[in-house]
Image (cartoon, protein in one colour):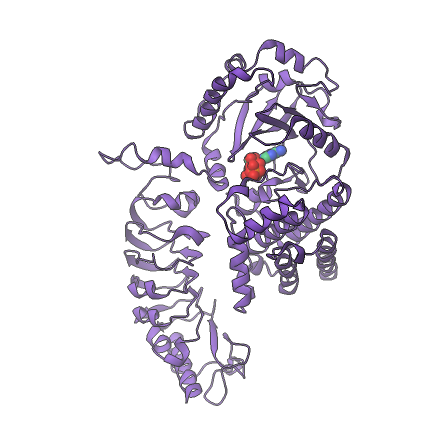
Length: 607
Ligand SMILES: Nc1ncnc2c1ncn2[C@@H]1O[C@H](COP(=O)(O)OP(=O)(O)OP(=O)(O)O)[C@@H](O)[C@H]1O
């Protein structure tokens, strides 16, 4: 019957894989007289009712035979259920690989670190459920197959092969990891792929265009075309990447006094100058800048009273770090653009005389009255928590607001998790400790500021900075000018908007925290609202292969699966579509701290 057919197919598959006629090690349980599901054959995972084989995972086992795809995928009763095939890290080569296309349910196919060669089967394009394709570190040659129809692809990893030709079109929308480095690919990198880091493409001498430093030779009629496109949708990731190239950043603090309304036009020109500088790095001296934007009298008004609370200029708050900070110093100092969102930019400003480096956030066209803004800043100044970055000073005019924060040279959690110094250990205990600190800090702030209606409003990895001791420091608390508020109408974003409108942005913070937790657990990049990542995690958890979601470096490190699953459950609760169904921040903080304490007890017991 069916069961016998599956069993025979698996035994045939294993025999070819192990390249020997001797029966498999008895402790594996693979034999004629037992059942792959009920008797838990090593490497086999079945569905909940033990009726069908869902996964075959035989990693790092020194197999040196062949993967005969027809032995698995041409057996109907097996092919209809198999969703994961991973033979990562063996010495296997392939046979009948084109038959893989018959394993229609395959969501993960991983043959990384083996000895496959020849061309990639075109039948890969019929695996419409595929989420992870990892064929890296083999000897594949020929062109990449056309995978445009696989819209759910999340990981596409083909690095370290001998693949030639152009990078074909993909549906890049869900792709989180894309790596074609160290092959023989040529031609331009598709525009949609520019958001991936340089490391995704290096080692292909004939590949060109962003994010690689070598420009593509311009085609006669299109040479000027791509430029404006590039500047259009600069994402956080791109900004981070570009910042590597910008050794000298751009000096600009655009300030327009309330009184001088007729300088609007002039201001627009200046804004354009900033925008332009993102593409073409240039340096503008502070005196050039000052002349254009601010009159001397305004500067002196700004610096008239160092102790702060001067009406229409820079208002210095009570942090001891802000002591002596003057507008003039900010204007004189060299500045570097750190990042730029739709309505805001952040500059690093080095005030040498004060021996101090600050980050200045400039927000344009924020529909908040100057009085409300001032009141809000003064209120925020009264509530302090060690893991919340207080503003040092601020400035407001009708068109724009400036916020001065202490600069944190260790960067953000975003950079730590996705940055170039990937090798740096960012292990499970540290991630869990950071998660607990963030939750505690938010719980404190929510409690103190609930009556004022002041939540964080835009919690995400790039707003969580790291101090000298690598402890988290949440910046931009209370600004509540989320960049993503005008994203395309996706269900969760809409409900988030709704809650925000009804004054309950506290629940949005819970959602934001949930996404941060998901990112810490999966190591995956989240775009915009966090919707993609949340949706992906939920789909994976629903498919009963929860372990698949975790960051591989955490798995490799041997992090406790139980505690990772516990934290995942907290995260999943936080990203519930319905704001009312999300737990309160106190509940979240309690749950995370319990997991963190478990972890600490475990570490002590291990020592
Ligand atoms: N005080 C600071 N010290 C060091 N780096 C900072 C500081 N404030 C912000 N940054 C970094 O500057 C970059 C730009 O910050 P910004 O807040 O504009 O970007 P964002 O968080 O991506 O977008 P958003 O405008 O939605 O907050 C980020 O990489 C952020 O981590």
